[in-house]
Image (cartoon, rainbow, N blue to C red; front, side, top):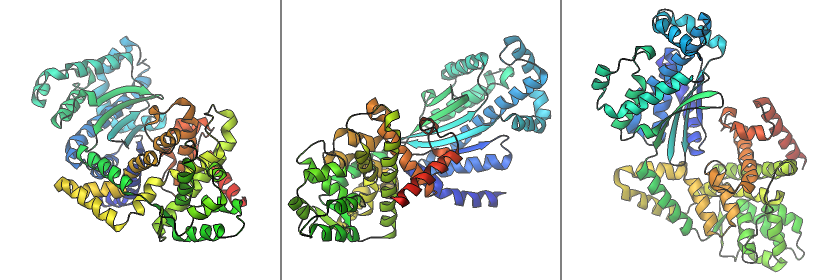
Length: 500
C-alpha cells in the first residue's frame, strides 16, 4: 500500500507545487475514507506543508486533520443512521433518541453505514490552499449542521480556555452524546501548542457544505524576505527584457522607410517586453495609456524607430530558452483569451469606462510580467538576490526556492507595475486576478474575472490546473456548469485563434 501511495505522490508533487505557486486549491474527495485514503491525505498534507516551508507543523496538523476527518465522517454516518431509523435529525427529541445508540450500533457495523453514505452521495472533502501569506486547511462535508450541533460546537469552543492540557480534558469532559466530545477541544489545544489559538479555527456553512477551517500564517521570515527581495529586484531592473528573435522582427519593421503599423502592432502583441516598451513611452504622453492600440496612436514613426532600435538603452536583449518560450506562449494565449472573452461578454457586464478589448489583451500579456522578470534576471541580479537571501542564515535556501519558483511573481508584478507608473486600475487588475480581490473597486471586477478565466483556461489547456481548482462562482458567471462546457469554451477560443 505504501509503495502505491508514494508513487501517486510523486505524480502529484508537481501539481502541489504549481497549486502553491499559483495559489490554487488542492482538493481530495472521498465517500468512505478507507485507511489507504487517509494515509494518502496525511502524506499530501505533509508535502503541502513542506512546500509552504512550514514542515515544523507537520505532526500537530496531521493529528488535527485526523480528528477532523473522523468528525466529518461521523457527521455523514449520523445522517444515514437517522434516516434508516426514521428519525428527524433536526428535531431535538428525535436527535436525543437517535444518539442514545448511535455510537454502539454504527461502531459494530461501520462498513454497512459507510456504504450507505456512499450511496447517499455524502462525501468528505479536504481542501488545502495558500492565499498570499496564509495557509487554509479545510474539511468539508455535505451534511449541514443542526441547530443543536451548532450550539454544542460553540459550547466546546467557549470552554477551551479552562483546559491547560489534554490530560485535563480527558479527565473532565464527559459528553457521551457526541462520543466524549473531545475532538474540537483537543484540536484547539494542539493548535495552541504550536502558537495558534481558537481564532485560527472556524466552523461554518457555505454552499450547502459544513466547513471546518484551520487558518495558519505562512512562514513569516520567508515571506518577509521574499517581499524585500522582490522590491530590490524590481528596482534593480532598469531595462526591459525582449526575446532576441522578437526584437529582430520588430527592428526590421521599424527600419522600413514606410512603417506598416498593423504589422508592428501584431509584432508587439507577441512579446511582453515589446508591449511594455510601447507603454513606457506612451505613458510619458498620457498617464492613462494602456493597450497596444492606444499606445501606438500616441507614438510617431520616428519615436517607434527609436524605441525599437539597437540604440535604445531601455532594451536588454535576452536569448530564447524552452522555459521562456513556454512563458511567452502562455502570455500570448492568455491575452488572446482575455481579448475575446471581453468582446463576448462586455454587453452583459457592468464595467469601468477604462476597459476595452485592447486593454484586456495588454493586461493578459502583463499578467506574466513577474514570471518573465524572474526568468530573465542577469547574472548580477541573481548573484545579488542570493547574497540578500544569505542574510537570513539557515532559511536562505528556502527563501531562494520561494523567490525563484514560488509566489514571488505576484509580488514582482505588482511592484514593477507601480514602479513603471502603470495606471492604478491596471496594476490592481493584474495583481488581483487570483487574490486580494476585495481590495478592487467593483467596476473593475469584470476585468479581474475575465483575466482569471483566461489564465485558468490556459493553465487547464497546459494541464497545469484541474477543473476542480477553478473558482465555481466565476465559472457560473459565464454559464460554465461543468468541465465539458469549459472544454468547449477553450476549443472555440483556440479555433478562433487559429482562424484569426
